[in-house]
Amino acid sequence: MDDKSFSTALLQWFSANGRDLPWRRSYDPYQVWISEIMAQQTQMGRVVSYFERWMERFPDVATLAAAGEEDVLKLWEGLGYYSRARNVLKASREICDRFKGVFPSDPGDVLSLPGIGEYTLGAIASIAFNQPFVCVDANVKRVFARVLDLDLPFNDPKLHNRIRKAAESRLPEGRSREFNQALMELGQLVCMKKPACDMCPVQPFCLSLERGVVDKRPVLAPPREIVKVQVATGVLLHQGRVLIQKRRPGDVWPGLWEFPGGVIEEGETPEDAVVREYCEEVELNVRPVEKITVVRYSYTKFRVTLHCYLCECTAPEPVPVFHEAVEGCFVSPDGLERYAFPSGYRKLMAFMRNDLRYSYLGF
Ligand code: SF4
Image (cartoon, rainbow, N blue to C red; front, side):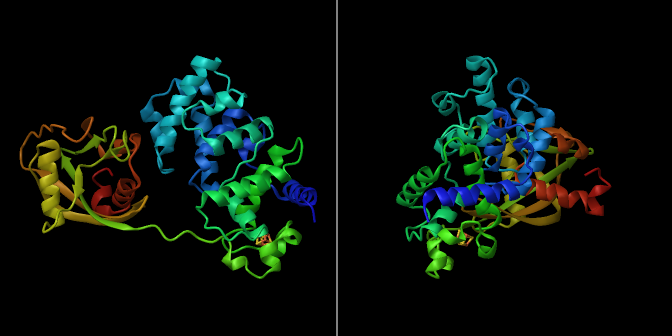
């Protein structure tokens, strides 16, 4: 079984089973770029709806370049890893300045854009321009770790290099667009965590299947350390409006909005933490009047428990002074939709919209 037969079997499978994804209809470089950035860290099923909304609002590089960061973050809301959205915006402005608004095809130019590294270059160069590049994402790594029965840990750079070489040696001339997508699609649809080997087009080439060690490949990296964090936040309602603030550059989630709050200190109750955080962050004395809910969410290694309170202000005319934010404002609850929030706060707002106690207040 040679490399050419592997590629032929894979390409035949892809031609019959490849999904009809919106960016595959034209392979427009701008669309391929956006889809690739969105797909990093996100399931493909979720990417499609985000992609379609994005293309409706920003149909080309020039429209995106002219947009404000607030608009871009709002459309990215829910995809996480917001630095990707900020880099996409920066890159679109560079494309307008340096390449007259046309997405560059030269690999050196592509690599010079913000947010584009080795993997994304390979994906754009091959999928948009059919240039002879490979792209090794987690799906491709899983497929080849099994096909070649490689016992290196999943995050070992040596594994990455072995797999990149294996993909390069199988890259069929003039077919890199299909080949790379086929490999990634095989990892997403067939060679999944629990593989469907009976449906696999490269089964005859799979050493780990032949040796009965599929369940041991790839060799997983040791689990990442998990840090649990208790956080409290207050929804300050004053004369039918709520206080929100925008996170600073350099914070986690810069440019996103939140209700004031923070980490609960040792010996504090969540209510005490809300009162203290409001004093420190916005110089307001607040009173938590009821517990709304408890929300749980994760980011990177953190598992956050967010205790959420409805608050009122002890002063008749609260004037916040923002110490931990670039800006802030009181907005009506139904206006919160216009702002981009991290996932924990979106969960809180969704809870409030669905709870009669708060929906009648306009949430
Ligand atoms: Fe993956 Fe099974 Fe195919 Fe091997 S035969 S590549 S383990 S799906």
